[in-house]
Image (cartoon, rainbow, N blue to C red; front, side, top):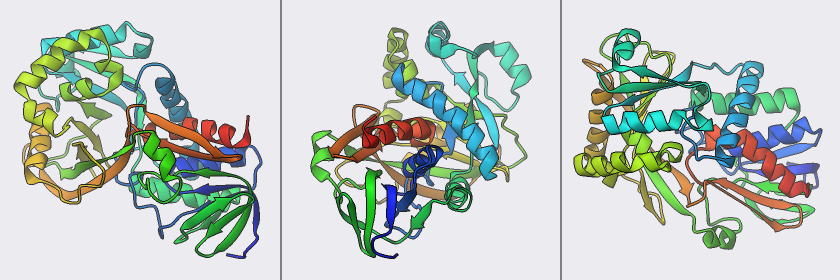
Length: 374
């Protein structure tokens, strides 16, 4: 780094929100640098499902963010050479109460483009799916392999869009036009800070006032014992009780009560099912949710067993084996996003609902507007 290098915008953090902000800024012709404290992105942006989901996001503004982000992902993936591995979602209703909830969901604006398959139709069309009451099919979702997509997106921004990246470079302080880093000082007209779940380095008072805490989750990679081809992501009743687009509807109350009676341990650990497939046939499966003031560093085998048990209740996967296990952490709060202007020209933004991949590009446009005073 050469001290004094000048930019219209410095982005702090190279997770998906930071990269999306850099993309939005270059679309407006701004000179952009991204400064990242690690040698590469290692946080929630690469430890997730790569599942860009619209269906089930909180009704209103956040659902609209997901719709916009899905469209941008579709464009960016094609331009950056990022493979879209599959598209769509199948939500298995395992109980009559869940099927009733899906019927109610379809009557809202969020159900646009979705359809409900009967148990008989699902058995014919989806032989790998366990029997249930009904299946919601959404065409809106897409899936990328996060651990490959995020570094490829960064390289594309650097090579094709001229974004400067400074890796292994913590930002120590911001006093525009100066951005002080461990490698020297950058000059910037504006700055967007995308700290992810690092709540203590820059502007900790702002994040503390927002009531943000950390959520740690457990995830698995599972290889089926025989070839199975998922046409899209798969979710289940537990997901309907968690995703606010379903869970906030009045018709969700009977399902929630039944789940509390029948799967209390799953709810205790925040377990619900998402299963997506990778190009090699393996599946990324999860997840659980444990909240606190710090990351929970140790995974639990009994929580993994809860996740795997739900997987087998939903999918026919004889002989499946776990090939990888990992934990991830993200910032969590009551609202799905947090954004604030901490100083003239300096915006801080965090997706606080675990939906960074799904809402990143739309949220980045909001952060850029905030920093630019638009």
